[in-house]
Each structure stands twice: as C-alpha cells, then as structure tokens.
Image 1 (cartoon, rainbow, N blue to C red):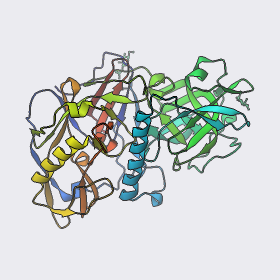
Image 2: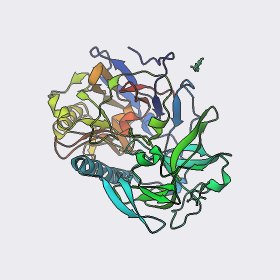
Image 3: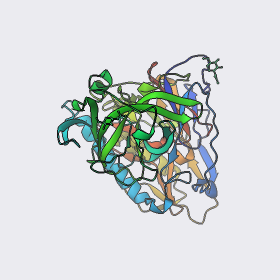
Image 4: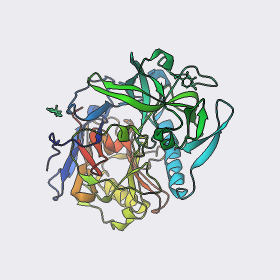
Length: 442
Ligand SMILES: *[C@@H]1O[C@H](CO)[C@@H](O)[C@H](O)[C@H]1NC(C)=O
Ligand SMILES: *[C@@H]1O[C@H](CO)[C@@H](O)[C@H](O)[C@H]1NC(C)=O
C-alpha cells in the first residue's frame, strides 16, 4: 500500500517535511532489501540548500521545516553546535520529557513574576535544548517574517514583541511590533481562549500568558491574535499566539516558537482543514495531552524482525517528537537492535562512542559502505523503512554511529526522534486520530 494522499477528504492535519525521503508501506512481510550499499559522499550532509518542492495539496496546511544548523538555516552558521553538543542537549531534553511523564499526575502550574509585578501562572513546558527545527512564517499586516522554533512538545505559539518591557533575548529578525500591525488584537481576559492557555492574570482586561519550559527558559506577555501567513496562499486569520514582552532562555536566535502539540492553543488545533493519508493510530494519555503517542510493535534489521516481545514497547509507550534528535528505545529493544546491527557491520572498524551513541564506526578511506536496513513496525500494520540518515548518524567519516540510543529502563517513555523522521512527510491527523508517514517530496 503506497502512501497516497486522499485528496477528496478534508481532515485536520499538518504535514511536516524534514528533509530527504522515507518509504512507507503497510503490512505484509519483507520485500525490502536487507542491506543497502551507499557511496561515502552520499552520506555526507549537503552544504547546499536545495529549493523547496511543494509536493502537497494547498488544502493541507504545511510548513517548510529546515534544520537550525543546516544549509537552509536562516541563522548564522558560525554559531553552529558540534555533534557532541547537539547530542548532549538531546540527553537533557529526553531527561526533561521523562521527568514530565513521571510527574504528570501532579499539577503543572508554576508561578512566574509578571511584567506588571503581579503573579501569573505559567504552564510548565519541556526543555527546548534541542528544539532544533525552525520555520519562517509571517505575522501581522503587513506581514513581518519571523523565524521560529518548531516544537511538537508544547502548545502555545509565541514571538517576542515590542516593547520588551523587561527583557527580550537577541534575535535575528527585527522584533515584532504589534502597534504596526492593522490586524493585531489583544485577547480579553474573559475570552475562553484565555482560559485555554491556563492564564488567569489580566492587565487592563488583556489576557496575560506565560510559559515556562523545563530548562527554565520562559516567555511572558499578552495573549493576542493576528494574521499568520504560512505561504502566500496559506493564510490563517485571527491566529492566537503570545506576544512576549519578557522572554529569556535557550531559544537560539529564533523569534519565538510555534507550538505543534495537541492541546487547545496549539497551531495544529487552530488549523483544522486539509486532506490526508493515515497509517498508524494516534494515541493519547489524558495526563499528558500534549504528546503524540503511537504504538511501536517491533523493529527489523536486515529484514529480520528482532526477537523483542511487543510488551517491552508497551510498558511506557512511545511518542513521536520533532524536538528530540535521536530515537530512544527501551534498553531491551536497543540491545537487540545493537547486536543485530553490529553483526552486520563487522567489516568496519569501530570508532569511539559519541555522547549518547555507543555504536560507532570509522568509515574514513572507504568509497562505499553497506549498511543493514532498519525498519520500524507500527500499530495498524504500517512499516517504516528508515533512510540511511535515520540509521547512521554521521558526525564525521571517522565517526559514523548507529542513530539510536537506549533509555535507562524499559519503564521510560520511548521517543521517535527527528533523525528517524528526516525525509518523511509526517501527518498529524487530529480528527481521525492517526499519524501518517509518507514520502516527503521535499
Ligand atoms: C481544494 O479544495 C477545493 C474544495 O474546497 C477543491 O475544489 C480544490 O480542487 C482543492 N484543491 C486541491 C489542490 O486539492
Ligand atoms: C494590548 O494590551 C496592552 C496591555 O493592556 C496594551 O498596552 C496595548 O496597547 C494593547 N494593544 C492593542 C492593540 O490593543
């Protein structure tokens, strides 16, 4: 079964294209190639930013996502992080996600000082340490381009706004000035939308929002609405977002963040119209309404399904997260994957470990490398054959590592990270409760 978009149905979803392409097929067995030979130059990241091929229907809401440290990044590449820094930050994000899951039963409200010296409740978010995909969108009329972090792990979209009464961090785009937008409106405290962001503070009857992330980064300001321009033909009037006048933390030089979680304030919940294709059921947990859960049932290496009981994956469940870099597996599943992978890679010289990655090879001096295929089997019969970039994390030719890591215990939440989603159109169909994976066409 190929991933055919259903052009005649109008379902709420969002398509995110993260680079090269994955192949997706439903059910059935094998049929794939057990090993793949790739040339060494094709493993290296391109330093050219290829132009965006718009492969999706305009009835879908889609965003072009580029890597913060990649060739298409609008940010200055001199500030790019090393692979070790990226992976170390990824560890902090996953620790923070795990903490959030283990404390989900407790109330997640925290107090922050408001700009106007009153106290406002803020929603606890998660570490943005590796919120490393960004999108450029236009806010207001006339539209002002703002490059924002793309995060499926939180819900509230916000940008820094003038006047930065207390603090704004440095950003690359000029800071948005709401007084210069003819379509900007403050949301009143009595609006139901104000309740959706969990804010209870008011400033002259304007709703004050606040979000604090797990790494103590935060944003506080007025909850507002204005026109959001994704592409010239994809414009969302009255899009609700935070106009942050007090912002501090690890947001890089981004102008803010676009929240693609599942709760009410999120971009996804606000942009319900489109058509789509579906593959695996989207599950949820009432205590953690933000996360997109799916069912990982098995993993194959070189067409051989690993002998891991499916219950290993179901103990804590699995989420798909755009802000986590490396996929995290229950240790039982990871060690089976690692042994099978190592057996297929005995021809290559091993290399030192890299942060959370413990299975690395030295490929320097080679023209070609043959890597076993790796596939993820999901609930509903969907199988995802990973692209080579989802199997090997190439820090350098002398350090190419298996792009998976183990959680501390089988009881920790599993996470499908963005390295494994690269090249894939990921469809979050909120109305049908399915997550689809398709060739990205970008
Ligand atoms: C978008 O939807 C309209 C109906 O609302 C339809 O007429 C049009 O062909 C669709 N466009 C695409 C590109 O699918
Ligand atoms: C929004 O509310 C703030 C605080 O009350 C106020 O300073 C600002 O002028 C308002 N903006 C608009 C466009 O109403």
